[in-house]
Image 1 (cartoon, rainbow, N blue to C red):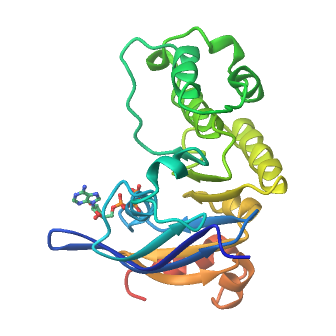
Image 2: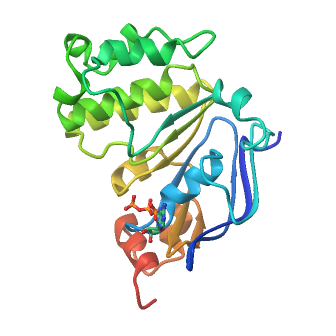
Length: 238
Ligand SMILES: Nc1ncnc2c1ncn2[C@@H]1O[C@H](COP(=O)(O)OP(=O)(O)OP(=O)(O)O)[C@@H](O)[C@H]1O
């Protein structure tokens, strides 16, 4: 079976800055891929290029066998996205934001059920801007799941969530994965990466410095703990 997400030699420059240098990625159906790296390593740039939101300088992307820049509309119905920065109307409530988003899809997930699953049922009528950072994050993950997507992109998955909420999100993602959904996420939390990711790709200044499983990353490093290994891969003077 062909990969659900595939990039080959994906490169992106912002003027003189080479933010992404030849990313090769292949993510199979029903697996979780973690894109890792320090702040500014190129993770969001890679996601923006994969989703067709940024035009790559060179290289190719296929999602569900299609080029996202050409088949944007079709793909949009099958791909859920949670980006770091999401804009919304000043006074819109959580429920209204869900309704507006759900209206874009043919057979959306029941947003009330998702809000309840994320412990947000009692916040449905509140303006989004009055939610706490963690509640807003959970709402944005809810929005990413609304289309009943085959593929989900989650940028900085659980930033701002408390430990219990993180575990809840992990459980939801694990069940999505078990149902065949393919997930690409970025995270700065190595416990999360170990718990969720089948495959990781570590970027340093836009360049892939490791691609493989968490176990391989540890085995190829001088360390026994994954976080130590990760820091080793991303060290400046390595
Ligand atoms: N629109 C843009 N114009 C110019 N430079 C940009 C733009 N977006 C990102 N960059 C630069 O490209 C590099 C990669 O940024 P990117 O946001 O992809 O990193 P990241 O790995 O997602 O970081 P973080 O973990 O902080 O979210 C950084 O040096 C950043 O300053």
